[in-house]
Image (cartoon, rainbow, N blue to C red; front, side, top):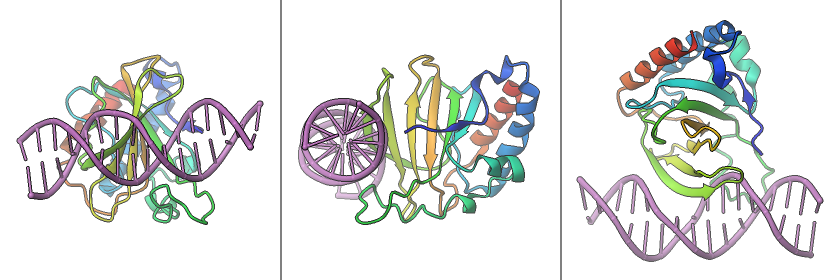
Length: 185
DNA sequence: CGGGTTTGACCAGCGC
DNA sequence: GCGCTGGTCAAACCCG
């Protein structure tokens, strides 16, 4: 089911083609920041670098527009209910997956999340945690999973788009962005 | 007491 | 159809 397209391979810093990635990294997050309600997946204390970004659809929107316009992803979001679909077709919501190198799983992205589930996943000794945004009417979900092959890497998958402003200062976010650029260059 | 977490049960989709 | 797997629910529990 996990059919993400990797935009930023984890080995960007060691890759010979890292410069091509850094250009993406430099424009992508700033747009996310300026949107302010796009989404985030970064935390403040222990992150040492953002390793990758994955997405299962609409990869070209990043490449072509630079600014990830969330509207282009949000079309089907609020219709896919909480998993219980009655007669609806399977509406696959676009999702983004970040890879971050982190000691902790919980990334402080400025939004408030409530954990609603945890599952053991195949081929991974670490469980996957499921979170939902606690803001009323906001249906954004995220999954947090640590890689078993490299337990220093945490994959955070976002699903949906926040319908409200960020609830906390995003200065942490900026910290991470700086780290990202350092990491990628 | 209110809000968040834990955890087993349940359900749906998919491959065989 | 059956079993596996991912995703969600919800009751119990925890904590400030």
